[in-house]
Length: 114
Length: 110
Image (cartoon, rainbow over all chains, first blue to last red; front, side, top):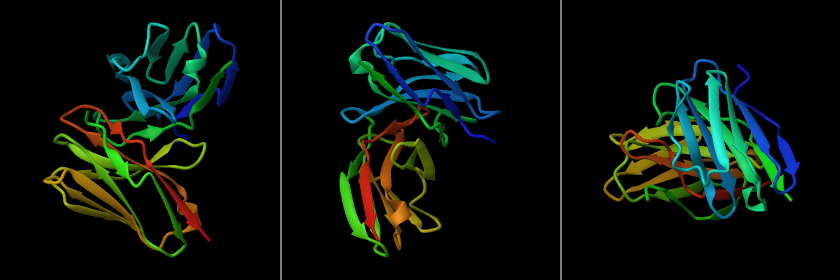
């Protein structure tokens, strides 16, 4: 298995632009998580899905952030419009069985908003 | 907050030495997990210990859990330069999701 796949690996954009991050979870996993990592705040859970349904989006910082999971093998995290404070590394992770089981992380997308 | 806190924030040792990292948390847990993150990479799961377990081993890793003190420790024996990474504990309260601490940065010098 290729593991969790994220794209792009690096994204540099200007303030106000729309940014879309993509994730392909491990096949067969029914949970998908989006995290944001910064030096100041550490690793924060933004939202997670179970069987493609959003379960908890309380970590999504603002209405500028939205996430979708149209099918079991694909999810997107969109920021519109982007701001410099959104600069961070965004991770996608997947797991199976329960929301508190071992999670498998993707390599992350390093986002820089100028 | 359920967030675990790792201690120390940074640890520097020589190859062959043992490295011990600690994690403290505030409320009751379902399980506690340790993850490793190499620079520029995603987190990798190391070990999971359930609330009714006290100790667990995996290769050179030994994890202990003391629910009365709300603390856990991760011991890496005979460390290697390749163990250089950040180590995170993640706690789970009830049937919720993982909450990660800010990590311990471990540097193992040859």
